Image (cartoon, rainbow, N blue to C red; front, side, top):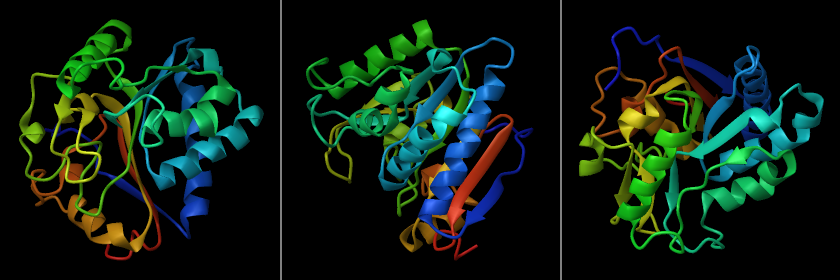
Amino acid sequence: MTSLATPEPRIEVHDDADELATAVAGALLARLVDAQADGGTAQVVLTGGTIADLIHREVARLAPGSAVDWSRVVVWWGDERFVAPDSPDRNAGQARAAFLDAVGAQAHEMPSTDDARSADVGAASYAERLRELGAGEFDVVMLGVGPDGHVASLFPGQPTLDVEDRIAVGVTDSPKPPPERISLTLPALNRARAVWFLVSGEGKAEAVARALDPATDLHDIPAAGVSGSQETLWFLDRPAASRL
């Protein structure tokens, strides 16, 4: 799934989740400024979860002191729960409450059950939106990693890991509730200059160690199947890094 020319992953370890969140937020703001240096628009993929929420709140705290032009930041999601638009399960709602509504970035949410009749239809709609409005390559893709090594809503052993002809797929049998989701595919996630893994907690330590082992099969640990064309960076707290 990855190019032989892809740089080796780098690892950055922080004492705890709060320190990790501050580091990632600062790095993201700096990266957005760099992406806009030539007058362009920065394209970023967000993830959900507890550590992502901490990071998003730190972005909101640090944003006023940054030089980011939020009118030239376009936000996408790596995956989303296919539920009602006002469900607390939605990653987009979490991100909007934490920082997006405050900064005013252009945010393209994945479809909810109000927008599409099925997760597959929603995935096709999101793929079309990316074709129309995306830049062909993301500046930064941020991903959490589950204890089983899943990324976005791509889970070990599922056939969605082998989809190569679509940007997004519907998921109807997620082992984590809710069962219906929409996810970018591995090829789509890999169309990124930088991929940042955001991992906190000892419960993720084994998955982190396996994902960073070059011998690991992505079908066992999907996180092993994603890398950036210019940078792959693992932001870990000490518990998550404890098995390296």
